[in-house]
Length: 161
Image (cartoon, rainbow, N blue to C red; front, side, top):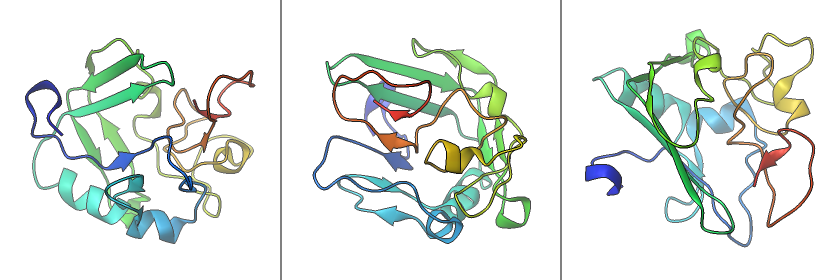
């Protein structure tokens, strides 16, 4: 990715593609990764763990809405634990960006999918919000939730729009 000087590794990509890639998937699918690297994909939690534990990396989240409005958030570091630790997220301090800080509250959380609930909620956040994530109880970000096309009225955190 060439943004902000380049050198970034993209581990998740979503977009307005047809057919739409389904991100409401199982633990095994997130472990291995899925999708088309040219369109929509999740790189895989095993790969994320390996990559983020071999060196120190900053994290940048880039977002664009259907009107072409762009937002971003950048963090000082990111590390994903191994499968034995349920791919625990360790994220550093929020550095900058106009998207706000929606990951600090997930710091230290383990990854949850529709078939493996590791969040702190009495319900399964991954099932309630239709997507896998490092949920706390439940979240401020849901970038693997349902992809909601175009303008719409929705309840809080129903998906990516």
